[in-house]
Image (cartoon, rainbow, N blue to C red; front, side, top):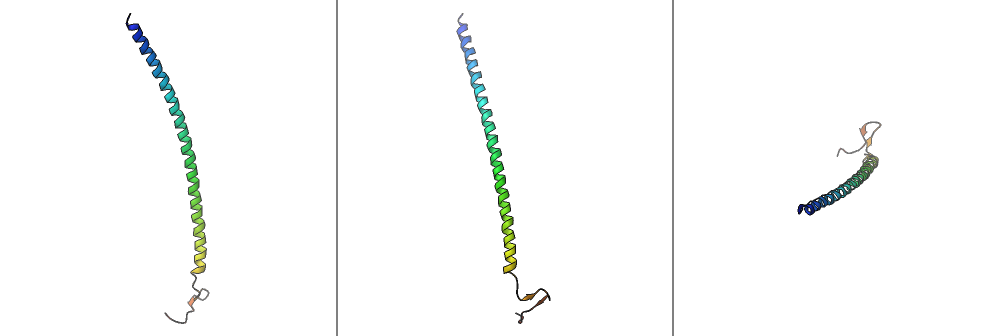
Amino acid sequence: MPSTPTLALIALGLVVVIVIAVRVIRSLRRFSRARTLVGDRLGDRVGLLKARRAALKVAFAGRRSQNGVQTRANPAYDRRRGADRRTSNA
């Protein structure tokens, strides 16, 4: 029977292809899990950086408003009387 070696080679080839496919699928699953883990950790750290940046913006805005009130105050304006104490009309 000349077809017996051919069938044996075909069966052996199918077994090899199945083994290789199983290994590739396992590797892809591991890669997918690692990619998800890295993405989650990176997203968490980016979120923390955004929160820190927002907190710094709030802190700087608070300092600017306090400094702005002190430096932009008009000493010629009398807040108690609501009148301008400047002597000239310029």
